[in-house]
Amino acid sequence: MTTLSYEKLGEGQVKEGLAGLPGWAVADGMLVREFKFESYAAGLVFAVACGQVAEGLNHHPDLFVGYRKVRVSFVTHDSGGLTAYDFEAARLVSALA
Image 1: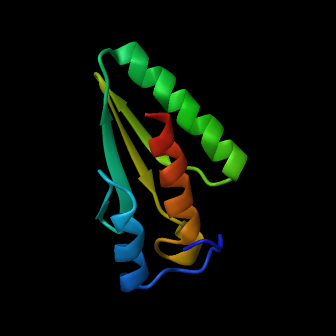
Image 2 (image 1 turned 60 degrees about the vertical axis):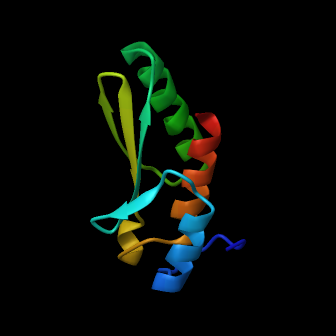
């Protein structure tokens, strides 16, 4: 999965993508991971960094900021599922943690 495309991935491609993203899972058709932090403030800093990564890629996640945790969810709504952009964005977000 080296070429970024908004083409919906097949089940095998999704499994292949997940293999390279420890901690991520598919839930309700979205690529999801929860990150845990030592403080609420650390989670906020991470969420802002996620936003900056998303802007750079022009592919934006749903973010839920809770007490000492941030849940990040990616899906390409226009494609009706997961695409290479979702996996690339997840890879970049993981590198922040």
